Image 1 (cartoon, rainbow, N blue to C red):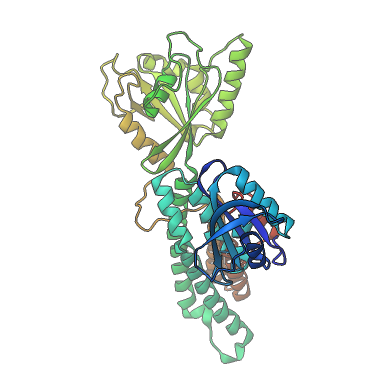
Image 2: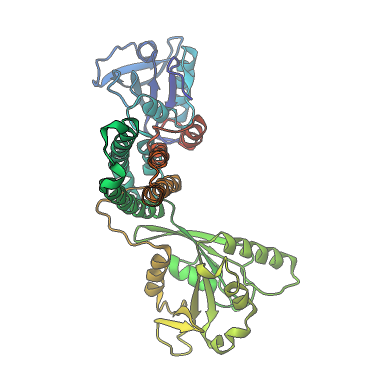
Length: 454
């Protein structure tokens, strides 16, 4: 955790050469250090030209100085910014000077951590900063901005307020039974709990969509040698990522590529052809392919449509379909329909849903993309969306489970004390999203994943 007694500094702009670099300083010594290196005491939010010098007074660069007075700054502390020419040598010299004058180098995410600890932002908004920086699509960036503006947090706070009101009413009725208010028989509590469950369902659905936008899905392309896996990868990517030949076993290792599918990041893994082999290199590729299958959200089982009549004899088909862990994630894709004159459409193979495509002729690829989004559960409108992490989804699921348990305690056991306890557990779960109820270990894990200077 951060110490507000220390003054920290770091380069806030990307590493490397550029037109401008910005060094950020935050803490009680900010104004003193700014004066030491620039000779200026700027007024808040006023840009001032300055000669930037080291601790011995030697000139380093000409630049600009900005000062933000606490609490009206990003961190809530006194903050100074030094705008210099974008040279790593210059920024290193200035950082060394600041450290020599009493500052220390900031840890990853420490500025955002201080903003959180000083109640400038909540934890969901702090995470949105990192997500905005790392966003890989326009949709992800837009959703991250909405989370940063507090859209997600406002939904959570509204849920917490409803939980708090219910707890106050229930616990008051338990503490003052002489008032003769039979809240359990009134029906109002049950209705409010059901309404709360419905609101949790709606927000949980949005959070799952936001998590997909942020993290995407892993898609493993698997099949026997020469099924057309590398051709399909190249067709989906729109460029020659993988080597394509008529020689079986060309792909030995896993090839990875990320696509933006209308706002949904797709992490595609092209695997080695699955077959029996005595080649130790190919055996290692096959081993990695099975590892990719185990880790994938969707397994694209690519098969030659000309071999459809012998599908039930395919060892690979039987291995995947008879595995209860893998089967629900399998999407059967019949390739090379240009050679069999089949249509690019949905079909069934032995009662199993499939689609026909031609990777070489790029027939049916749009149908495949649509099917991938459906299999991932991706059906989102950019209006009103927000970015979410897996931990947010887990917390919302936990809160919902506790509300459902509260409904059961009310309707089945008529146990007011247990209803109140379940609501408290739901409130704690939601508090973990915004940081109102969380541990130092979780905070350390979250902020350590940020970039330095943010």
